[in-house]
Image 1 (cartoon, rainbow, N blue to C red):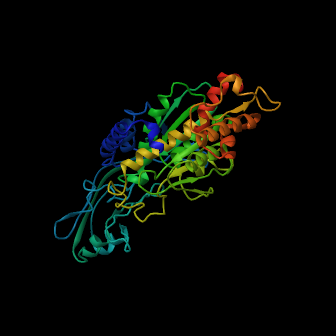
Image 2 (cartoon, rainbow, N blue to C red):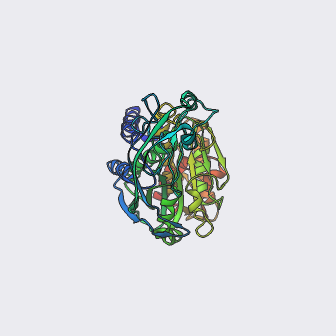
Image 3 (cartoon, rainbow, N blue to C red):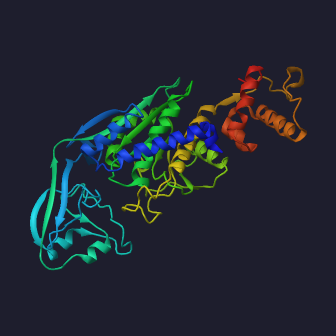
Length: 437
């Protein structure tokens, strides 16, 4: 299994425990596309990955968009006619519409009702609602809570928030390799307390960084981006888009990748990029099912990376995809919904994609006319059973046959078919013997 490449069982358990510890610290923070909750979350992740934080001022033009005012919130609740406190931000930060303007007023239920949000078909779920680009206020509650509210009497509405000129924060980290060519991993950090749709992506990406940083040698340069969804990546592309067009070989958006659902790979708009080839090759050679789907505009920040002006080779890796699971954008997307074992496996899958990219190369045989004499070089196995020996020899000869200076290693493995990792040792041995370059 893939996780075997991460090390022994003890090492995997240590990662799971650490993932859970960081999850528990990040979970209660009320995040948004700007503000102190976003900054606090990025600073916690700096303990795992050395992110450089950048501030983009309110009013800055980023392509067709503009950085909005910065939103911060301290308190939000409603006092019902019987004196009880409901929709309390301190209990669940989904209770307030994200980006609500400050308000302190008393009103009848008939006026309050227009500002209450619930899902009748999911009576126990608190919905997640935002109003980033239109000044408004509101509260979210379960349908069961909503039904129980008295229709007579006065309600006191209290939202202590601020919406002022400030900035949008994003974090990035670049791990230099031997080449200037880059591999991108991008995720968002802007939702309040949701598990699969919010914290899974940043946690998987941060822990992936550790593994990539520990590689003794790297051919590619690796770029890790943590930004508010949509507006944050648009701001990032305003600054780095031209650079990425010149250097990016493969990229992946990580989102909704922390539950026990089947892995789903969403292709780049290009459809047959190196990113697509490497991810699908790794997933095909695992002992677990996966799904591969074409690019579509419904989704996350791959929309920005793959927009017509950039059309970068960026796909997306998820498990239970956004909008495919009922708990999406509700309070039911919580710790009970996710699996830290699955999250650790997602880290492992991403690391295998990195390893496949690093192994992938165009090889050329030094003996192009007929096959080389392997026996005189001691390159035939002598002490394995016949069935294993046959496959062993065939992979080695297959590799030499397709090392034509045009076909890369992933394509060579696909033609066998086998995993690129099955050819890793053969490449090393044949290079050492002077048969490949």
